[in-house]
Image 1 (cartoon, rainbow, N blue to C red):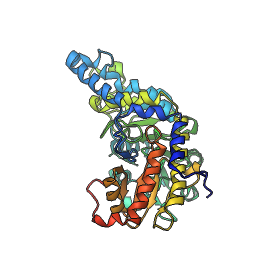
Image 2 (image 1 turned 60 degrees about the horizontal axis):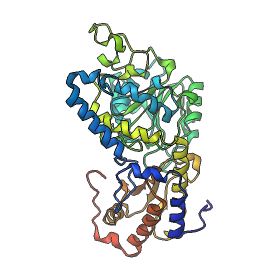
Image 3 (image 1 turned 90 degrees about the horizontal axis):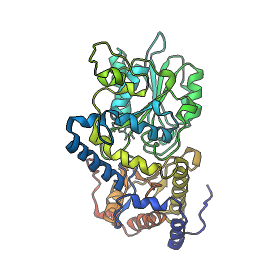
Image 4 (image 1 turned 45 degrees about the vertical axis):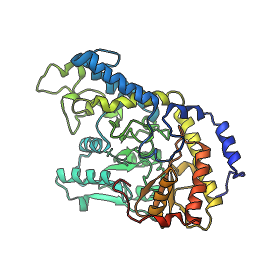
Length: 428
Ligand SMILES: *Cc1c(COP(=O)(O)O)cnc(C)c1O
């Protein structure tokens, strides 16, 4: 594919930064100037606003004790609902269709236990062979819980090249035996973005419910979940949304499904006015709030409050525009500077199919990642041969990208990687 970048100089990178409308938002974050952080697709940086909102909630505990549930500036009881409006704007949903709750893994269990209703011949769940492991493990256990053998009833659509999953192949596998589909929005390794709108329409045309795992897209790419008529979705808030390590996750349920009884209920599934009546018959909330189970993890939501304020200072469309531009710039630099050094770009080149990160393959990927860190560049490594590099729209500069490509070059040319061993770390 033809390069859009014509000038490969450091000066040009600086010019791009000077004309970047999102550049001032970098100041919202704690960015260590000696470090080039390209791992925002695994753990977003802490923002100053997140730090502030964490302290605010600590103070609210000090000040209000038990009354913090209903008093103070941000009553804890309503905190998951109160953030859902801001979150809904990022995914193209109505506020009532989104709730901040659980973890990605537990939300998969919650939503699949609700929407996987095997009937007659329709007993199978469809995923892909390139899915993140937790998604597969959760689907396997949901099948087992309903009495089905995962080896027979979990369809994993295969990849033609080990990197991408073709939408045509997914659609071809939508047989009359499929009850439910769960797909990633963006594949965690190759960064391929699936066409959610098309896949949803095709699934519905065959009477199949469909949901998406948006861990690698929410906060980086616009979604129009309601317009696309997606049945359900879930995502974590600590990657592109910068909600902090282990921060509470999010889920979406299309309002046409309101009134269903969630697969996993608890007292927080209750209508809020009824909850403290303490009855043994549950009055299910008529919103996505019904998919909560127990008491919200207030301090693990706290950083998200500040982080979402930053997303309100721009639009998700502008974030996507910069993300595509800066990742395209990185691809052009890699093609120009790293020729013949053993690097292969494994992500799609086409903007419409590309998520927020660059997937760079190399036989020496483990050692290259270690050498990058020694050079103060933070990537992450995905076994066996992928260096993932995420130029995040909110805080990565074009100069960061320029320098990173120069460093990738010297690591090979100067054989810097040879100083490291080939064992990956526990958290790669
Ligand atoms: C990051 C990620 C997860 C993480 O799940 P947790 O429950 O937060 O540990 C799950 N699925 C995908 C696709 C991810 O990218």
